[in-house]
Image 1 (cartoon, rainbow, N blue to C red):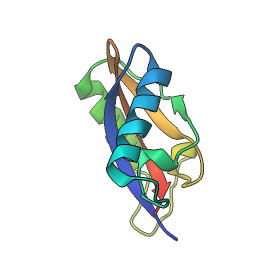
Image 2: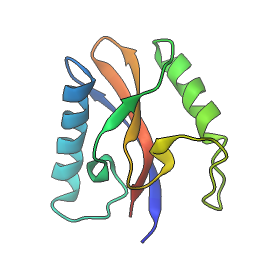
Image 3: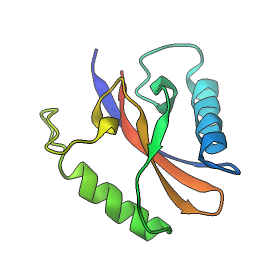
Image 4: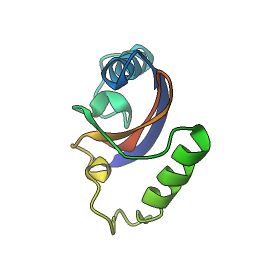
Length: 105
């Protein structure tokens, strides 16, 4: 089994609701199958400090993913790049969040 990178935007009154909404959307799309490489494989999330706004979030995600290479090695220490660990979350606006990381596939 491998892992795939995912990045998804979701909305909710807070990050917990947005995460659950994103998981529900992925479950609707993939059904009950496992190893989808999507957010539905993740047990939860943690917040990454970042200025609000889509531009700031994309810059932060680029900085973090630049440390991940195509051989599956990550030179940083981010839990979200472990396929069985929590994904990362950045708030991009009121009720808007981006979740990203690696998920089992």
